[in-house]
Amino acid sequence: MSLNDPQWGNRGNDDGGGGRRPNQGPPDLEQLWRDLNRRLSGIFDKKRGGGDRGGDGGDRPPVQFSPKFLGGGIGLLLVLVAIVWLASGFYIVDAGQRGLVLQFGRYSESTDPGLRWRLPYPIQSHELVNISGVRTLEVGYRGMEKNKVLKEARMLTDDENIINIQFAVQYILKDPVDYVFANRNPDEAVMQVAETAIRQIVGKNKMDFVLYEGREQVAFTASQLMQEILDRYKTGILISKVTMQNAQPPEEVQAAFDDAVKASQDRARLKNEGQAYANDVIPRAQGTASRLFEEAEGYKQRVIANAEGDASRFTQIYTEYAKAPEVTRTRLYLDTMQQVYANTSKVLVDSKGQGNLLYLPLDKLIQAAGAAAAAPGAVDRSSETTGSGRSSPPISNEVPPQVSEGRSRGTLLQRDRESR
Image (cartoon, rainbow, N blue to C red; front, side):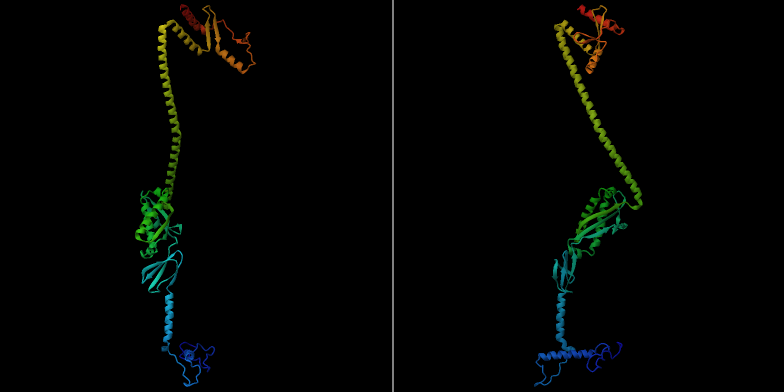
């Protein structure tokens, strides 16, 4: 059986009962139309009270419907279409979204989350915009830091050096109306604004500042500058965070840059070591200088005080000498001898010029006293014990040649006393 057969659809009545034989193709369209008319006629007859065909009117012919008779059905269909058309105006706005209603393509209103209704298309339409999701924009790389985009990453610093910077920008929507209607492509605008802001900041700073100590400051300043430019363009975007992923010199000069960095680090290390040495030496030198200065000042004050004291003493002695010259002279002599003997460990005494010289070894006496104190049981065999238990040193009557000069001096002193 072929669709081009002119008898297609008219072979369903061969069984005499109006039915379709099995395996004889689709049913006859005319037969279906007749069945539909028969059923509709039965329904309308029941409504008119003509359930039985007997009576005054006789048998009524069945109502035959034609396509023109379907005016009521088309109205019902139109009502259904109108209901479906009006129902198409319902839409749901999820949490974190905003609905923008457009009337003939022009912005009309914004709707909050929930079930909303608008006039159906083509009178009104709507767009759903996510305002809570964080969007990320990558500049200088895509996906991974190894996937570099050198056209975006290479920038020129203030000291005429080239560096590669990779950073990410995170932003959200603060005004969906401006985001959708004020700019043709707001995401591309964010990309251009981010690249412009970073280039401007990098171009005003040194290479070392951007690579090391100023990375956080560069990111913060870039965030502020980007927000200022985006607000000026009315993009409806709020910058959340700018993160610098990587900043380094170009690969072509990476080795030379590493050498320069090592030299800079060595210079800093040596500088710190020298500063530490200076911090150790300078305070000690300053302390020594201060101590010497204080000692010199004390010596100065001591010398001045001694000089003033000697001058005052000389004046007082001169006054007393004018009153009693003999007494003053004797007193001076005794004081002088006391000072001399105090610094002498050996004493030579001339017994009135009779040729006998008494020698008192004071140093030996002091040593013997110290040894006796250290060992009380030890007794010097060369010493003689007196009745009081004290040991007396031996007295020699021989005159050593070393004290010949002392004898003459002692004789002169004895003669001076006798003359007085």
